[in-house]
Amino acid sequence: MALDPTILSDDSYLSRFDRFFHRAEAVLAFAGGLMIFLLVLLASANILGRWFFSMPVSGYIDWVEQAMAGIAFLGIAYTQRLGGHIRMDIFVGALHGRWLWFTELLSTLIMLLVTLVLIYGSYLHFYRAYEIGDSSLDIDLPTWPAKLIVPLALSVLALRLILQIWGYVRALIENNHSPVAVPLIEDVATVAAREADALGEQK
Image 1 (cartoon, one colour):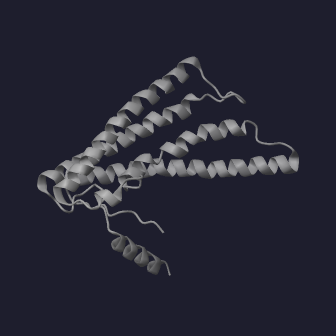
Image 2: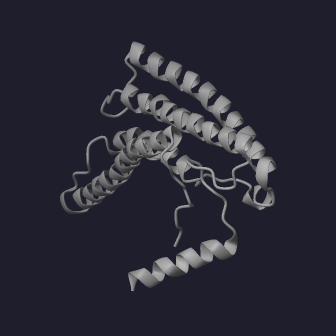
């Protein structure tokens, strides 16, 4: 059972922005999960309709293709806030103090630059689809709403990365061992203890 990493908070503006913004990220992640649920219902209706009535859902593939953008991108900022993306913890976890925060800051800056490039490219892709009236092959669903999800979700990710950069800069300057608004790396023993506590609470 995977648990969220430790995210500390205090009364600073950074921490307040972090908590407020996390609520918006949670709404987007919920929307992505809702899309998955609706897609499961659609797939069930498609299979049952085909088996019992020889009437599959019209444009099923088109609906699945449109939902993929939301499923893949709506939870991306939420995951970043929790430190859930793939990373080299085995290397970063060996660092301490200012070296740790410098490494985290550098990697987050690089991620922000890549994200900004992706926002620009995905927005152009959306705008081109909107201008030419691009649609799906089967039932002519307009593709621009799904393509708009990508730059919007990436923009939310960029704001999350800016908040984390703020947190890492603050930790680097203050040499703070317990910074707020950033995911803290925990050793294996700590994670195992938290998981055992969580399982004990469920019994």
